[in-house]
Image 1 (cartoon, one colour):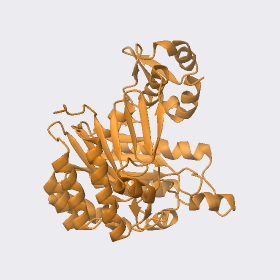
Image 2 (tube, rainbow, N blue to C red):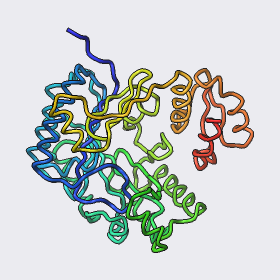
Image 3 (cartoon, one colour):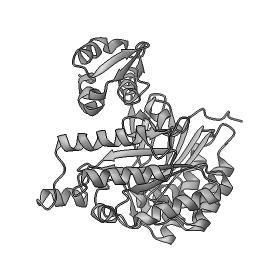
Image 4 (cartoon, rainbow, N blue to C red):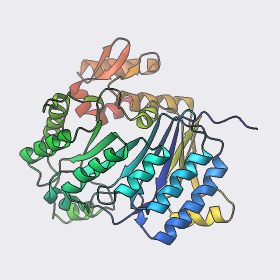
Length: 374
């Protein structure tokens, strides 16, 4: 018998949604019950080809996993529960859209062992949600948080989108405070970006919408840091443990932290990526091709990349630097000259033997990454 794989994380991509949001460039297709059943059949075949697995974390993302029916969610989770060795499992996350979460689905998740939910709130203003093309209302987020806690899932993260056209500073502060008032354990704050192929991209190209200036974007992100780290309302502030992520102490997302540290993971489903040793592969983003291959007994079509040790170290340095803990100097020794230059520019600092981004460096993280890749 083979020993269990020591891969740290298992990611499952559920490629279905109930319609594209204006800004979304992630691979997804419209949910159809029969197609989703075929996808679960295919996923079972791909999982069997990947066994044995004994991950520390499981993350079910998408797409919108919660668009699946109660029966399909139960099948997906029990498939993982029965085929994956879960003795090392410390975190099991599922992404939920506030518009497709309910008490039945929450009960299924709690019953199989899902202990963390990432909730795509995005905003607490219905006009901003409409601008983003979201299909839920702010009240739905409040309702689903209560449902999850009643089911016994208490580790809840909220995703928010900053820098949305039409969102004033006062309105953004209100959204941040409404998020804090729900007492989540984790908050992610992402700046709205112009992704090719999205509805937002077309509107921007036609001059029908405009992103905030770089200065205004930085001001909104700085406001998020102030509001979340200070918190208020009688609650302790969140720690900014990664550029876009804040958490109460002990509630950092273990799955994402492992990825930022360059640890290994297996991805299942169309568009899912895997990283083991010096090999990285990504299933192609095509659910029809994915299913056809697996139904014929083949691996899904995928793109494979062989990393060099130097490239793997470079990625480890760049992604590790996004975290508040920074990167150890011994790992980044070959980049000392670049770090010395960045330090002279006030973008990084050396603390307790680790390179860390300064406040200014966090705002210019993309520039820092480019400098490290030279």
